[in-house]
Image (cartoon, rainbow, N blue to C red; front, side, top):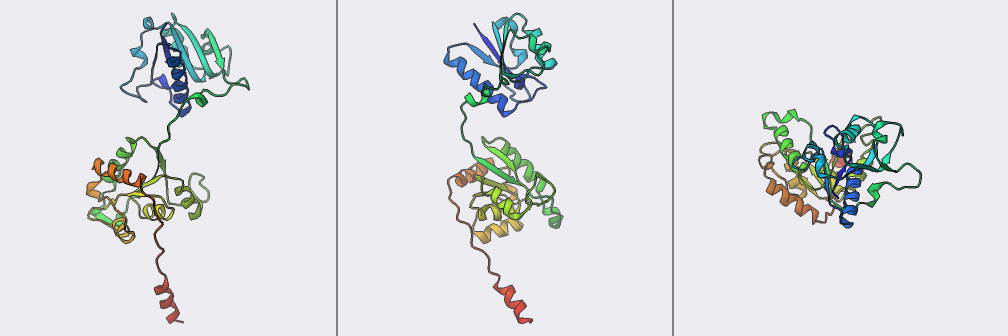
Length: 282
């Protein structure tokens, strides 16, 4: 017996959701525990360099297991055609139309929508990873030719994409009618406080991260240093220069330091000078 483990995350034009991947993980772990030989196939768009459907000839398998998602559409039907010689089983799936050939092609279906069966993803082990809030500065024309925003952001986001972490895009801009943005600064600082680390090229990404007690990987997108560098100096916090943004070893070191550093919110600035200035004019 040899099983080919598939799902929507196996199709070239499918999609890989967290639930899909965890369901495949759960089934794979169960097969391994039972001593059942199996391979998992992934979409080349999601996991290049792994086994894909074209790499899994039907002659090498006795069974095909399809885990998670709805049984419908030509991609699922194509499994029945390609693996017609295999016994085909679906588990943890939705069956919107029991008469759809995508569903009737399976020899056995273990559905999840019967009102009593928990979703497969609940059976999969997960590992906690750091959560990084990413706050990128917009183009800042006031810096003229010194602005290196595009190059810095390409390097920084490329680095972040390669980390084993959860990435959360954050925007300091507020909006009352856009549900994807915070409506008040209190909401934004509350959101930032849930992050493990903030990665930013924006002054207020640095300042509000520290205000929320969250360590910050601060990168100045301006060659020679701009307001991020000046504010980092005022707060006694390290900053990566624009010229160093492509140094992944440096970024790794800063992130490692952030993950092991407890942050004390910086002191508030004094407004006494402004008050005295205005008071003297009364």
